[in-house]
Image 1 (spheres, one colour):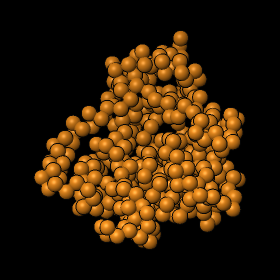
Image 2: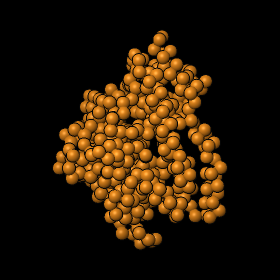
Image 3: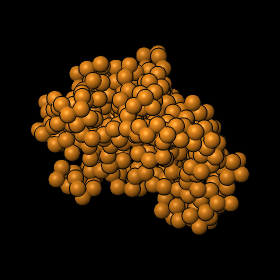
Length: 370
């Protein structure tokens, strides 16, 4: 039985009529950029994330760029982040003229080490970007405690709707950061029909500036207070996301159930380490990522069986050729480098059937029996 890594068609079948009605309304209205559909989505995402403000933008990468610009980060500044993440996190730092400064990750969660981040901070450090990798929040309260006064940009591209207990209270992804950034790339738990992004903040002044920056730096047409970007969220994407948003909690719960099944079924399998969720976290499992021995051989075996997998991420950012100028070498961040050699992500989408789950588990067990 083929088991794709992701099956967006299965999700679409459950919401097709509702989404198409909403899309048709936008087409009939012929107002495609920003407007009420985007404002409606912004209010809904702010409510979910328990933030005062949400600002839609063109994609998750732009969300990071806009956040950095809104904090006046540029040439001569340093921003601390993880080398074990998607390229956009560090690429955005570079593209505003600042210098990415990497620190290693935690062995169990794959998230940025707060102690490591604090150890590499200098007088030039103007922000830190923890990434909520694979759907569980980074320990941002520990980052804040160890790096007081340094703004936190929470890269929550993979964690909309995730939460963490901080000081006895459940905090949503993006809620406690200076600025949180979201991506609505189609493969995300809340994914659009193309690119889309959003920024979250509790700060009114930051929200006002972010709205200005996404519109070429002007608060009204043809008048520009600063040089900004063209990074607006399309109304078509907004209505698609608004139709999906009420189902997000159900879909994420189903992902957690699938993850629990995998972890229980593979708990006694030698050579396999299921993912660890921090006891303070409720993950949304954007990815279900194992550590395994003989990763590449396992991936090839599963491909032969028709089972989709992915490696997030095969080469840490500090070893990417474009960041050679930073001076890092192999061995600079051994936990990240080991993760890159061992990780493999399995199908986890909410529409997986029990037979498909069993197919994946059975194939993994068969590989290790060889």
